[in-house]
Image 1: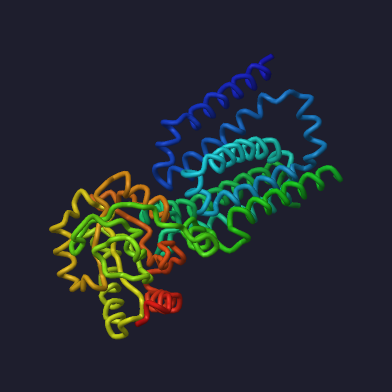
Image 2 (image 1 turned 135 degrees about the horizontal axis):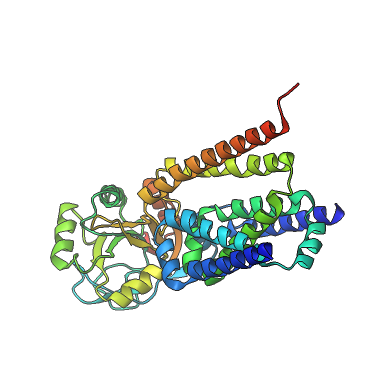
Length: 194
Length: 218
């Protein structure tokens, strides 16, 4: 019973977070700056997707598992989606083209759910493959944003873009560090090398 | 595992298709790149907006600058116009833009009858009144026969022009603006046909001369 209540609570939190993130005032506020657009809105929607996935019925999860062994499909889809959503034109288009905005919001929620449903199932090898794709990409995009002499988005300021670039590099480094720490702790659980 | 592989491939295909759409077949990564590509493929007709500025003795529509059949204070007869958007208080990009336009004017003067003229349009009409524009034009030694300095006094007209040419103006947080400054080539039929970086002014001028109608080259 406790597990059910927990997942109900989480999926409700997911619904609330999703509604907050897509509500016009919050969307306007997060999309007013490039940094908030990518760091706050993207993260919020990924998180909402992850929380929402707690609400999926067990039967769906079982069926999904057959299409997502070792979390491969979910992580492949997630890394590709994140790559597409880091193309600077997406940020500009999302402000002017409602179709792109809707697809972007939808893709982020779906990616959040896919990440949660796939991460644990993926072994270290698949996780290395995923992070080996996403983190260098994030760092490269970040340093491009940081070092570009011109703006990559017409709707955002250069200083904003440079802040975001630096933040992306630091997030990539931070995630890598956390993952390595996590891996180290796991190994210690297994016991010392003989 | 077959199903997982299939789903992965379908997702990869979807991502590839959306990336191809987004980047116009992997040619551009930014909205600015897409804008420049799209005007080459589909020239943008200049909307009929009213311009005002020194040397414009009467209210002038932008289309009249390049359409000789319409009454206009400008002497143009089917010329190519190199257009740039700016505002006079601009401390950074527009200073470079001003120098570039001075150079362009010299180059055009050195080769008269090339059928190319210059037009700088301020997107800040609330500050850039006739006096500011006049002062700017004199500072930059703009020859009204070759280089017109103007603004679009009507806010709705201004927005229509900025939207049509995809000029994005945003506050820079310091009381000024950031904008996608560029050299816009408007042909003799008042269509935006090509966009160049301000630093590529030599190429822009060469292109404008190349497409100038023969009749204009006296």
